[in-house]
Image (cartoon, rainbow, N blue to C red):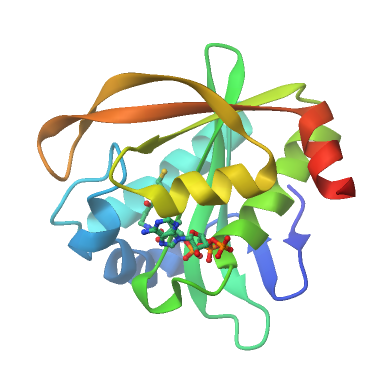
Amino acid sequence: MPRLETGRLILRPPEYSDAPAISALIGEYDVAKTLAEVPHPYGEADAYEFVSNASFRRARGEGFVFAILYREDLALLGTCGLRLVDGTFDLGYWIGRPYWGMGVATEAARKLVSFAFNSLRSERLSAGWFADNPASGRVLEKLGFVADGSVSQPCRARGVELLCNRMTLTKENFGRKKAA
Ligand SMILES: CC(C)(COP(=O)(O)OP(=O)(O)OC[C@H]1O[C@@H](n2cnc3c(N)ncnc32)[C@H](O)[C@@H]1OP(=O)(O)O)[C@@H](O)C(=O)NCCC(=O)NCCS
């Protein structure tokens, strides 16, 4: 499993020793409430299960999850990942609240998308964002994702179904966006 690097970030598979940092950051309601499957409250045991599932899915080629670390001090900032859903990799990410608004999600997701197209040989990726989370829609738009309808999707932390905007990115559109 490769370690991916960007100007500011290192992306590497999550480890059990990441569990305290993961649970502290994703345990904040403001982070969990715009994710589909993350419970709230979220404890260290949930983080261990997350790391274990990531390793299981990676071994089967069904999922590629990365911890996002700041290069300078190796602080864990969040995670991002690709998960195979009906034959297409679906992109997901979250960043801890102290690190919002610095372009971290965009920088990490851009690298992960390159990995999907170049190393996993994907032709198309999907992603979704809850309608009340426009920052995530903006991250996807910056990468070249385009709207692909909307669905009602359960949000575990909030315990309700919410409108989720679906988006798609082709390899061609990603290349075009990068070149622009
Ligand atoms: C959504 C999230 C990933 C964004 O992370 P981030 O590192 O702050 O994102 P970036 O800084 O790379 O980019 C955010 C973009 O959204 C824009 N933005 C922020 N708030 C916005 C809002 N309310 N409306 C519209 N755009 C907004 C920013 O201006 C920026 O765009 P720009 O570069 O054109 O200025 C982060 O807030 C998060 O982890 N939230 C909780 C979990 C989550 O929602 N994950 C995604 C699930 S689909």
